[in-house]
Length: 113
Image (cartoon, rainbow, N blue to C red; front, side, top):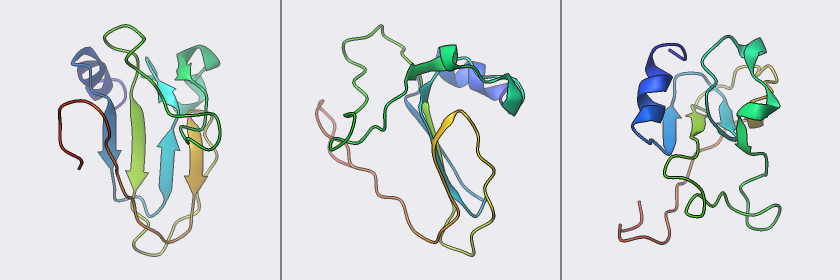
């Protein structure tokens, strides 16, 4: 999937990719160009290595950067029994606890989702 689908999504300027099925929660940093195996990720692929939390390092701000500035990848499948999650250097968060995902959009001309 990384090798074939991600270049297409990134070329189209996709900001966020949501996935499921894995019974875990994972959220990547704002990244770009990670198309290989897990061990091929490098810090140069991080567009923003912060937490994306207002109370910590702040939200990812893409407006001041080039038109395409990376994608955030989220796996949200923790409504069922959680699987063990192996740490991955592209991920800000990797949790194996039950939960849910809430998305809040602000700014721009679009209504909140």
